[in-house]
Image (cartoon, rainbow, N blue to C red; front, top):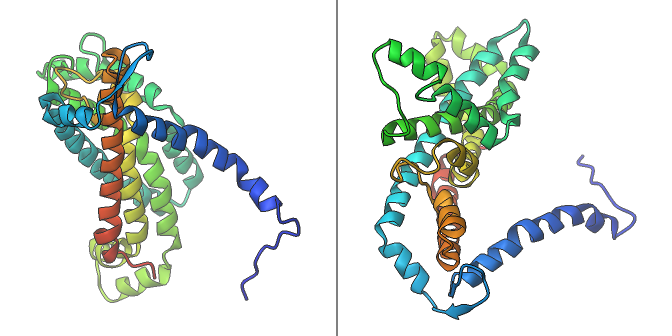
Length: 294
């Protein structure tokens, strides 16, 4: 029989959730409300004067070629990061689940990248692929390939995708490993007795049972690629070269804090928020239908 926790003091539950509510109000609702409010104004660089322009900021943004290019760059970047992190996290989880001796050491080493800040992760990859002093770029030159992500937009995109995926793969690894360990071994053993090979057992039995975990990770990885990769983009490429890695969240920063277009930057942040909400809704509305929770 299910046991429920009962608080004798009716104010204690509210007191326990008060810190989380306060953090949400201060760091999410208040900035979001300010962004929506400022998106309807044209502000000067110092914020001393403002003029109500209604939807002019949104119209100018959607007409601009730079913003449309940034939208395409974001789509490529977010899709690549999401797919790559899921593949790497699932592969590492499957391999770690098979390890018997020293499994705790393997799992500990694999989750370390998640503890690194995005900006620090970006700096690590920037030094590895530095065109003049990077170890990886030096080895590539020995192989006959001249790597320079400062001039080549495709190479810059590959670099930030790898850095963002490396930073996030540990997070996916933890969830996939927990999902694998919750699958009854009897199901896998029964399929092996029936003659199913390793790939067949994984694809027909293990992977479908991981669908709730996979669906959850698709949603959170998409949000991560849209928002939480700012530190990596800023430290590695600063949106360059020629806007090749200028994703939407970085363009919000660039137009607001460098170009000092506060109204336009606020409008971009509102559009970015709406895009994330829309994509999340689509995933829960259509993709979740193929998820089996039992």
